[in-house]
Image (cartoon, rainbow, N blue to C red; front, top):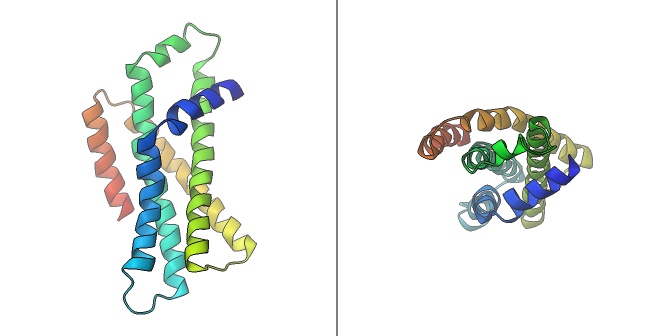
Amino acid sequence: MMVQTKIDFKRAYWRNPRFVIFSLLMPIAFYLLFTKVMKQGVMNAAFNRQYMVSMATYSLVLSNTFTLSTLLYNDARDGLVSLIDLSPTSHRTYYGAKLLNLGLINALTIGVIFIVAGISNQIHLVWSSWLLTAGWLWFASIPLCLIGISISFLTDENQIQLVSSLLAFPLAI
């Protein structure tokens, strides 16, 4: 399981610039844009905290609907899932590694967005509030992960992109 997780992490996230751009850099850029560049009047600390959580949620929606569904579809299309039947690895291990990676990625994404927000806007919370907020966001990503898995069972990449878009953008709003 750990070998599969390590290989899958490198292949799916480390070498995937679309993930880094859309699921991590875009929410960070939106956060900095709306709290630093386009601020009108004096933005209070409550807005900065709320927007930090909003951008972390937006990142989770994008990574769980777009990235996960596309990765699973591409694995099935490229025959990787069929190769699992020929290897000592089971489907349970394959999907377990995917979910373990996604859980790790979600936690890292939340952490990075929280660090950027905390440093850029001097957000001060007690540690228990930081951890509780991050924990709830991570826990809330589980249904989004299930949505991404469900989307991956569609038969066409265009359908996956369409359904992901139709779900992700209303969820983001």
